[in-house]
Length: 422
Ligand code: AMP
Image (cartoon, rainbow, N blue to C red; front, side, top):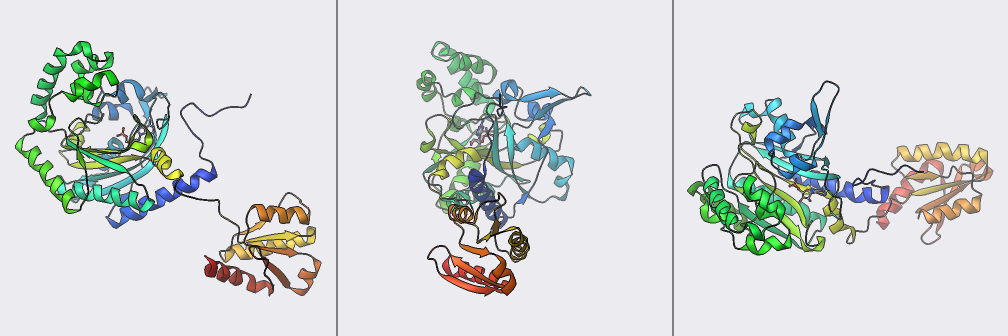
């Protein structure tokens, strides 16, 4: 029996990788314009990092982490998200010491043991941005504007920006109390999971997608009515900066997100093209206090993570990314001509030309069929005569136009023709 990939994980074959590379390149290009630098943290982390940051009560830590003990008895896991590792690295390497704002981004795999379904996998990939060292609402607006620019450059349409504030240590506890009181009254109407959550972490109830819970959730008090002056002013300023940039958003009081470290601003970008449940493409928010949870000094942080798989679903239909076409297919008549082609291909590649040779011993006719299939722009048939004369016949496949060239002239001819026609 053939061995299969692990459930919830996916191979990315070359035809899909082209789109992934485009997404990654656009992210790097756009983020750089705003002063962001890439950071790469390990895939393995201590499990404690996530228990302390996203919360021991969170679904991720409770149910979804790939955790194991190594031979020394350390509890290690595959990272389920990127923010806590970035903040850990930021503190571990003393990046907080220079008093500057650090603008960081990452691209890489995350792991959660969830029930696989469309848009939800066990290994998935995120593009994430973290800005550390400031709690200015204008910076939040800048991050959101950068995200919109990136998505716009990729041609993603129809995303809605949902915005909320989840309050802070001063104002949230009062809201949670009221919430708990309301939930206690309506236990019978809640799903079993929400009955449990309303005791352990009532905010999570707001996140529930079970249809039966929705009428209850709709009638729960809004966190926005309980914000302290600081949180209210911060939220208003953020909104005014977004208005200034003409970024539209929907204030969504039930958007509390699944991770414990959020304070103040939270946001999501959702698409109706992804169906009713796994419809969030981006999730983010402010996490002042995460630094302290990880043993560092008080710190400020804001960021987002974007799920690449979900973005790919939105882009797949609109983009036509075909595999690269060879510039020239060198067809050979015999072993001697293969040697000549081999050397010529090497020279052409050195000059930036994509040269293709068949290594499956095809007849000349079959080589030409292959050149057609690969949609090579030019073909060049090489035999004894060409080797002797040093003159090579180039055929442009599109219209059959033929020229005979010195060996040295081939690369520039192919490149100029490509530049003229593209
Ligand atoms: P989170 O880290 O949970 O805030 O998620 C941020 C984004 O990552 C989501 O909006 C999704 O696009 C993506 N994401 C989260 N979990 C998964 C998953 N299991 N499979 C695929 N994408 C995911």
